[in-house]
Image (cartoon, rainbow, N blue to C red; front, side, top):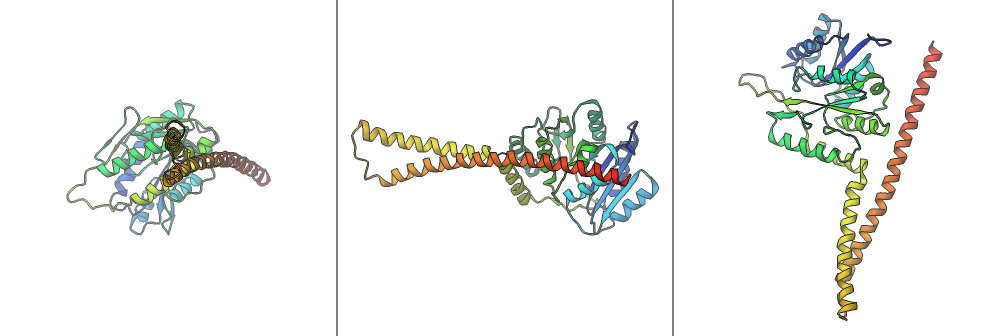
Length: 333
């Protein structure tokens, strides 16, 4: 079943200071994967937890050889944790998801089935596609997520509605070959961007993201969500990924407003014969708007050229990476 792969499926779940729930979460993950008719490994990445998380997952790994632990002492962020998991994975297919199964117990089966059935290289769980939804998610988080993904999906030419989520499936060789750099949650956008550059195929499965209502006596988990930093990073991604969307729209608007002002001045001077020399501020504003709009369009042109060059450089980098890998493998053999 596995061909040249050690296992058919690798499931990666990063965690940080999750001692309150991680024991039950790991059991739930393992039970969900066990239902599949495939050999598997569960890779638990301890992202520098300062509580008892590491000891708990080490105990789970000692009880089941299919559970593996990747651990390091300093908290490095989700991106670093995922990259560590990718490097440790050995599966033909790779799935990444939260350990608490907020996407439901059947999400791993859905992603795995879509990877096997379809020609997609990347399969994304989305609450924003038909059949998906959010449940019990705080209104602020739900609003930021929905609006953020509405903006993000307009910056990449891929048929997906969820760019910021971690719960995804990949062809193992592809995700392991991508040269990824982001250490934090921006890695989700980086992966999408680089897969788009390579012309890879995407697919989505509808999913229900359901937060559990906190119980009265249950230990509280501290939120790691940083809205301000995440909004800033996602806006920067949108700007760099699709500069035409922001600067082109702004430049077009400035040109239109400047043209209207100029048209008004032309009518007054050529048709009505009025002296407009004393309207210096109006004239300067018109010139400013027209020149700013033109500058924005010029900026868009150069930004588009840079983005095209970046894509070609990335493809070249990946080809060289694969070539060096094959050469090193030949030397070692």
